[in-house]
Length: 316
Image 1: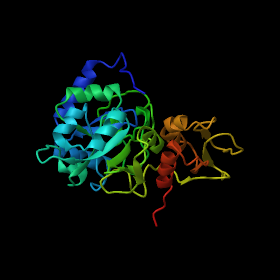
Image 2: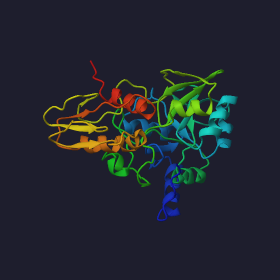
Image 3: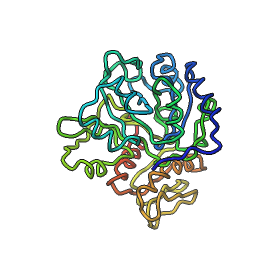
């Protein structure tokens, strides 16, 4: 699904974003997955400021965003299966883990000094228009405070992040982060579940051997991540007093505070689109915590459940 550039998105807004990025500042911009907070990927000081304002550990790498595959080829080594996946799913919610070329100018800080970096081409007209104006890629994690929920609209930005120059592109059309993949000789490894499902990959490449693996070269794999401020319980069959409810499908669950249904018709695409927005709305309600109804663990449901598991993780 491709988002169309708003008629009122004047070139002056993109020019202002370009100027700020060129001067080492940060810009928040929309993508089809979630909003990103971007900096010049070649500028180590700008990259440092991303980690600082997000309170993000430098061990959690960043994804670099490009306007086209030619710009990626100048910086990275792509293998045959990288090209296969890129042709099938770019622009789109696919992040490929690629090996940097020796002459790449991309700051080592984007990847915690590792030679492998996550790269993607977003399927969002505003993001692509901005990238085409630049002569450098954008290192851009999600526009949230580290471990907190991602945002799919400007209204859900943390108050500190709203001070940063931002481009309002409306609601993100997918609502979940990109899928992070590293190719292998026989297929690929899923390093982070995302908006691109395993089923979609198998439908295109039925002969691929697909594994799921955790890796430090991929962002978004902390045990505690994607969390609202309020405590969260998942896979519930009852609601405690003063808990808000994040529901799914038709059931007898009800909250005395507030409830929102990701999809009454049990449509996982609709649920993904609503996920972070509804979670943020409930988090800002007068509830003592958030209870989440069971969600099928297939397709996009597998990604939603991954996020919920991390959101509900309790540090010992």
